[in-house]
Image (cartoon, rainbow, N blue to C red; front, side, top):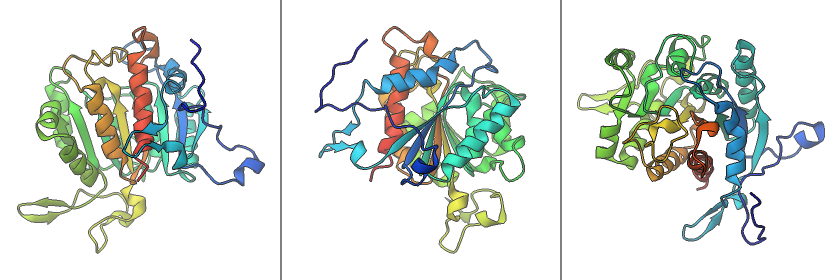
Length: 335
């Protein structure tokens, strides 16, 4: 379908390629980078998620880069974005390390890296590459399975990552974990790790702002305030992560990765997610929650996962929602 052209109605997406020549490298770095990580080979259910990065890029052109405010704000006037292309064959051991290195390189130059998946296995290399010390997931599932699959990235970040790249489970917050989509054994595993789990029911009872504030505090390594007084937010990795005199960890230890597994949403708005269930988040809830978390500059990386573009409805509603999450991640960078 050919989209109409109107010089007064700009379209999102179509960002310039990441600077890869010596001449371009001398230019000012963009604020954010997009990278495709089309993981799919280890998915627990058949998926065409490797087709999704291209589909999201195409869907972005259906939207404008304008926030209504008021006043109306064109994101292009406030942040710059570059597209770093796709990782080749990211499911192999070599591909995982290519992803880690690509994200690490981008992270040295931009404020936020946004990875387009792919199934949820991309969370493992992207969070590692970004140097994340805290993790927030929007997900109906725990992703704490054994082995290597789209059901294991959170456990792998805790147990399998190289020394110095592991995430302390006390700095992991999982939002949207759903009834009838998990097992008691994995709930016990999450509790044993010390992960903060916000179930779908708790999220709905408390609201977006309250849950987002708590999640950012825990993942950012801030001390937890209890009735007994101030307690550590967990055993922080590396000596540099000990909270300073102001009560906050240093910048390097405050880095947070956000995993947006779109199957946290209701199946009516995310039919292209193989594991989405009726009763999940509404589209507006996912978008608002994404922007609420994305306002925090400690969120240095994010991924969008578990969308199978080949299984979406003819109107492309799941891919379009994923594309809007990209824009919400960028909107959160605008103060």
